[in-house]
Amino acid sequence: MPRKRNKTKPKSLITGITGFAGSHMAELLLKEGHEVFGIVRWRSRPDNINHLNGRIHQVEADLLDLKSLQDVMIGVRPDYIFHLAAQSFVPTSWTSPAVTLETNVVGSCNLFEAVRTAQIDPTIQVACSSEEYGLVHENEVPIKETNPLRPLSPYAVSKVALDYLGYQYFKSYGLKIIRTRGFNHEGPRRGEVFVTSTFAKQIALIEKKLQEPVIHTGDLSTKRDFTDVRDMVRGYLLAAQKGEPGEVYNIASGKAWVIKDVLDYLLSLSKIKNIKIKKDPKRMRPSDVPILLGDASKFCQATGWKPEISFKKTLRDTLNYWRRRV
Figure 1 (cartoon, rainbow, N blue to C red):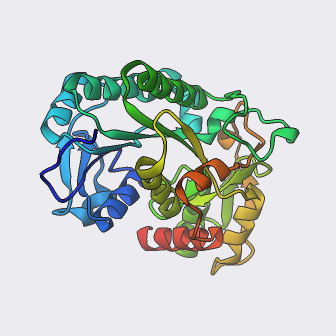
Figure 2: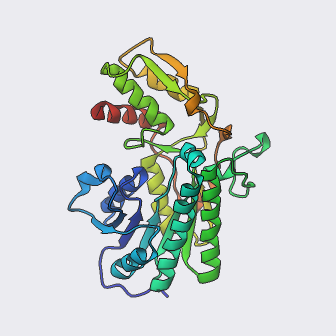
Figure 3: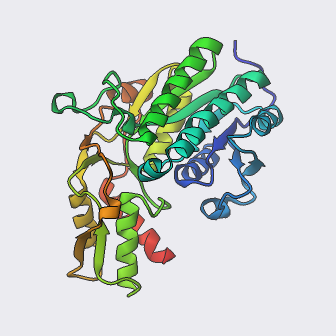
């Protein structure tokens, strides 16, 4: 039986609200009439949410501090939790594997424990990752949720653990956890270390003569399934509203771009021509996933979601974002 409610607005709590996806999630929830709470740490950079001051509630806590999370759960009593906080940069997981595992696994365990011990009953959307699939064979593309998980980075391993931890807390304690395996999502505010954003920022710097006309890259041969972040967070909300607790859903566009083609399109938008491309050994990974192309039919059928923003628009918006920033 759903509990009786005395309020008109649903309460939504976002972990990672100061991040890329978290800030877009906050904007969407406000637009949809939610009362939005965001967990922030004392050292969080607020740049992505400064424009939302006065419209959201910032609550201080840390995923690695269980007591602080319990205090938030008891104080806020959210109807929805969108768990987006993570150490999410794959190369960093190679240099700091223990930190990645602690943040993404122990931090998530603390979040679930805080919900359980506060004896509240929110719907929890957990942002897992397509990186969990790792080594995918040619005959397994496009990738369904039933595909074997063969993670190829410490980050991917951490997300597999989070994924299964969410399932375990659903089965063991009845927490209404819905797991989403989002494929690559890009757009304005994307961290500068991520592929589309680093290309766009370098082009913006070159246009302002702040960098020599050379783009430094990693491996350009891999293929990725890209979705605009604004479509992705809409998927997160639909997962929470219409998804089945205990289930896992791919969220993907169903189209793969070769990274070289992404760079070529961004270069075609540049005001500077004859920009050179130079591979940087520091940007190469010890092992990489050659292709990630998702099958989101299960999610689309369950929620009615479909991508609405073209990836070319995503790239244009990302480049213009960096033109304003540099």
